[in-house]
Length: 517
Image (cartoon, rainbow, N blue to C red):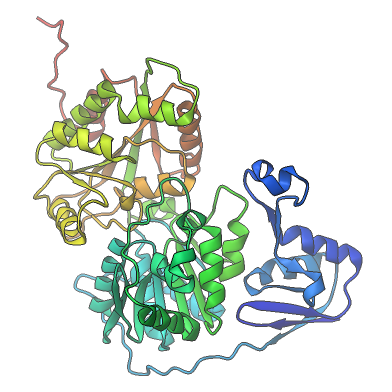
């Protein structure tokens, strides 16, 4: 029999393990780095491109979050084991902390299930689809834990403000904000992951490219003003008794590892995700830092139970005029600078607005957004160039339908809570599994405060037939097929899309063919 000694960061297996078990553990607790074959060390034979998360030579140790996988291997090989949990349980040093439900708050069955599971397991990933009330559930979890310091990590400064508003409105204690130049530390604080990384690393040696998730990841925060403030942030992370990382599937592997391993005293370790999986093999690192997925509430479950609306997703074919060999050239000419295509996107957006549908147009690059803004009346282009106040106003205008259309960059991929949003045009392309579900999820929330019944949403995915982009469209389609409640429709093309939209909306067609007399 062996003993598993459990710690906050690492755990160890004490006792003899046969070679077959050692080999199996080494295999299960590892992953191959994506595109490792292109790396100089791999090319030269100095490294095999595999990240190993089990270390026989370090006392048979592994990251504690991988406990479920370790148990599977031991059970498979019929190795008996006991566990010794040496993690110090933090005291409930905020006994008066209470959850204050906001006006019109609806307690959902799965939210209570989520809270109960979290309190039982103390760590893990909460897989809850966009629109499932993840932030509110975590807020109630914090109120039940009653422990500080607690850090609520977010990806961007906009999400910091949004999380701050939710926590401030639902907990009877001041909430801190750490990010974009702010360093207001309270017992419970919202902190951007960017600021955390800046604090942990010496800013002069920090290479942002080592910490970005993908090509669409935007780091646009102000730096930390002084070493004194950086030291306060480091101390907070080190002393934190609980941490939650929102949208943890969009945290780069290195970022996740550095922040979570720095929080050596965090007993409560939670990650939240609308799409708790990753396309590259490094998803196991997410589990290593947080633990296994303990809740899985899909968009289809929420649709079937009337918490979300069903999306009607049109895949509209787009002809490309030229063929380019590099991805950058293809993207530039077929999407960003393709005037006929963008003019068509604008026509579709304007048509949706004319039908009373509030519409979000998503792009990746500024030139495309700038051009679309000239074609769509009364439309704001929300990007990193606007101040937080300007972005917040634009989002609020769309929420209240003072504006019926908004263009946005990928900053809208997470946390854009607009229940009134009716439609989304994915004009910027992209094939990320984590991002496409989020983008569609923006339209699925029900507006329970409106007399108007919202029972469906419209989404348009553009299927470019050019090199690279055609593969992206096929990948997006295969991703979305995994949600049985999503209605996938094949459009006949630009000449038909507005009529097809009207058909779904139940609007009598009033358009005429140019050849009609």
